[in-house]
Image (cartoon, rainbow, N blue to C red; front, side):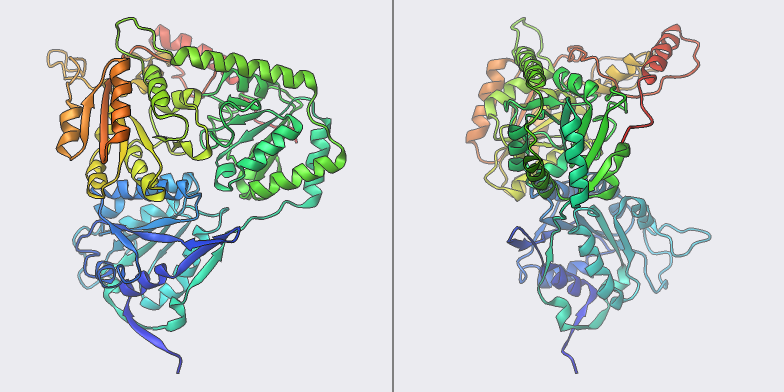
Length: 630
């Protein structure tokens, strides 16, 4: 008889997870480095018991967050910083605890980041029915709150019998370790099944190494790209997150230095090429640089490397105005490689660029025309000068603008510290103004642009790379959503800096509201005016310094350039979480760059301003392309 181990589902799951490793380029490491969890009646005696009994033995560290959403953000940030080669598992109880992870699941899947989610579920035996926190459906008895994870997960399963785990767990890890399929993986664990025992085959717990794929491009497609590049006079490269996940930054640099093709960046791809590299033309799209957008507007070939070509990158499909332009996508995901009717080259970014480089050299291709290189260089020089100017504080006695704060922080921490941000107006400002000197110095969650990601994201990065200096840039509105994870960071003894830019609410959306012709409504942090019944009273004063201090952080208030610089420098010397609260002028905004993002305007209104804005909107939509040349 084959050897078996008599374990509960909770115990078996922990042991299986501990035995899963990944390998890429000859480097091997454990894939799940630990568990995050908040316990309740749904998981404390099942998976929780398994963690107590086996996690320390298997050297799987357990982390206790303050919010279930926050722990998924930390896991996703950890996976992003580790280039998807490691992540965490997250466990919750049934009901609201599980649903708190749903937003985090969306973040992970949209950004193609692996996380393992293990929410508890109703009793499979249905004897305690309904169990506490169970949602009842009048027609479908097998529906629970966890079905909300289905559209957000790359793999979803519910374990109603112990032996189902034998098939489910290997498939879950296959998906998470596949760069083309990865994202949130959800395995729902009914409360009673977690505690059930089964005789598991011993080989189920043997070490398994998952090879992370690096697919090579098809030679025929490489030759087709060569022919297209040889016929192009104004090509550009769009570098996305896939370039960084693939660690293809050297290949990108060598490619652009060999052939002179300008490189433009997405949020996820920023940092793959140093900001001051001669070929780096800056960010592209709705939050892009004048240099990059001018090149993209007239480009006759767009080589999209490791990007999913979101609406901000394409300026809602209005960015590329050359009707004869052709598009090539190099991406490990067939779906992403095929966006905008591209010629899809399904390949790892590192290997795809290497093979294309070799083929171009073999063909005798000498690169882009000299006049095009000179044009790109001139545009980038102008852009760099503008960024330097806008980041430079003008001593006028007023509150600083958010973009001026960014310049001060960047100058203080340098280009190697990792900046973290996710939502509001700051991501667009950071994309244009932050100057990273290496690929891991820029960490933006802009696929889901999730408010609340920032502080847990800082935790994930510090766990992924403890020696890395991290600065979290966050607005006051986002800070109020997910500040509780400061307690987690303090408890773990982590050291990083949080810069809270206080502009009294959601000024980014207020600016968008005004741009849409709508009067100010519901975006600022104001008292209610009880005479009018509207939220138009004075600003609500929040003492963020005292608030951060109450959670164990060291916090200071800094309003002038010298105070901000001194506070950041002091934080760099201090052990623990440091919070720097900076008031900023809510009306001092980045000047317009002539870019566009499709936000529909009311088609009919009794307000003249909205009618005029609608006319301008309709004019802008005429530049959108629905058909792209191949």
